[in-house]
Amino acid sequence: MIGANIGTRATLGVAVAAVAAVAAAAVAAAVVMAVRMVPGKSRTATVLVLGDMGHSPRMQNHVLALAQNGFAVSFVGFDGSPVRPEIAEHPAVRLVHLPQPARMTATNKLGYALQGLWRSIRQAVGLFSILLWHIPKPEFLLVQNPPAIPTLAVAQCVSVIQGCRLIIDWHNFGFSLMPPRITKNALMLAILQRYEQWLGRWASLHLCVTESMAAELIQRWNVWGEVVVVYDRPPSHFAPISTTQIHDLFCRLDLMGQDAKYRDEPARIRETILTHKSDAGIIEMRRDRPAVIISSTSWTPDEDFSLLFGALQEYDAEVDRRLGHSSSSPAHSLPNLLIIITGRGPLKDIFAKQVRESAMSHVLVKFAWLKPQDYPLMVATADLGVSLHTSSSGLDLPMKIIDMFGCGVPVCSYFYPCISELVKDGENGVHFRTAPELCDVLSRLLEGFPAPNATLGKLCAGAAKYREQDWKSYWDTSVLPKLQ
Image (cartoon, rainbow, N blue to C red):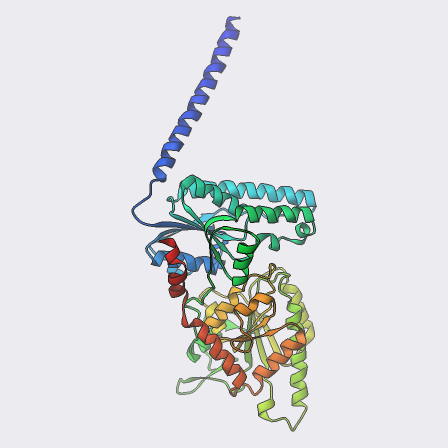
């Protein structure tokens, strides 16, 4: 009996000690949280992207604009590609890296759903830990959507706990980007849509990439808070470049294989596929150079590269047809094409195989994964850009077109309704819907190349006009007043 009483008392003592420890921890947490919720002297902001920070150009632009306007910024996201140097080196910006999420490996529906749920829970716990404990309390919490899970739920909770103002930057709708195994399940898709609509409704400010998206949020989602359209603008490092810069870039690249690769050392050569260096050291564009067409992609199903492949095959045949007519004048001749496609993704190998097996005589396709500082240079090398973006929601715009306009490069864009907000047909680009239409566009714009083409010249002027207002000045007039 005595031993039993002693055991009971010991157990009770441990329980009391445990409760006391938990209580002490709770008090300590409350004190720390109270201290952390006292506003600091300087203005602070947290920018959250549940994705690769280096591959989030719009969020990087927000970060830099905030920092340049006196905010101390915590930039939270996955550590993948490096961010721009002006952000990494800015004294007011702190980079906070999230742990990389586990890969989704389940093959059956139940396993996939459970794995996704567990991953979301882990991500939510990690986000709470960082946002509440490891970075200063912000005045504004700016989050990118999508992804909506678990970002919106966590952001809503954190904004309530810390009393900060929530800003949602709507790039697209997350439910529209779900994989087929989810979109085929009507109930699951409806749940995800309701989740996003409900948790995305409350914010002090909603930033949208298009007027169409803003109308959707106001009229159908009934969001609370002000809705502002903030079009992307070309960053300053996307700009036209000199012939010397083109020569230097192609001296550093080896184009012998299907994938462009960097040389161990820049080649000291007088000729590249585009440029020639004279005995006097003067660099000029070659008269017999191919026209350069650039396209950037993540190689996902929402971009139908069969359209581009079909158009290139038809173009190759058209070049042969015109060469076969001896009466054809140089003004009606068509150049060879150098197609540069940047990016990585699951469908690249399929397209690469199609190109290898096609044996086109007048079209050379190269794939490139470039250093961040070289991508703007490659874009500026192009004579024309091609965008195959179709938009899962029909309400967003591709950032790659902004980059091309920044370099003064007009764009042939696959048509969907809101693309007209960016690509003005006949002004800074051309719309197409089919491979034959794209082939016809290429033939019209490149006829007589490299001699001046009036239509292409007009489009180049329209593209260059888009960069007259940079992101900083545009952001300062459209967003900054909302943060006062």
